[in-house]
Figure 1 (cartoon, rainbow, N blue to C red):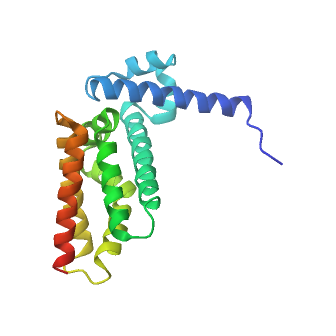
Figure 2 (cartoon, rainbow, N blue to C red):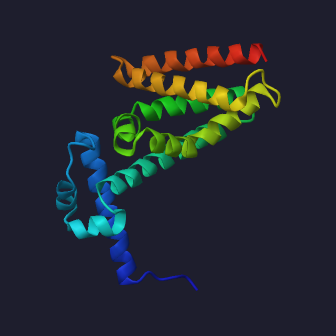
Length: 199
């Protein structure tokens, strides 16, 4: 028998969604440090108690907003890879293109790349970021470089991820982001070809 949500369950879900939406909007527009918990709950039409009940405070809310953004990003990258056929090279290039496109979007750039390390601290930011996207990158590299690459896969993934993150920030700040994104994809392709050549 299909579960019918109780009124209380619906209220809990809608309260959580309202806080996430208010937090996402405020953190994107003004940044974590410049937004107070009071502003968020007021924008959501709720009380401070609701924020603490669901997220234990402003930082917990930010982390939930951050994880939502990362979930969406990972799903989009995986979809781009999955839609590129069976060729590992094409799959890798399309995954990179999707990642750079996502990171150049204002909300993702602000929440994940700029505010994430500030709000969560470097260690927690890195842990969450790797949890969502690290496996996709490592799996893609294994497909491209084979089971016995010249360099340790985890180090290679870290080096490429660092490069991708910096490129994403550069693309987002460029005068012509689509052109900069194409150039960045070309650059990453050249780097990957170099790694494949010296296996």
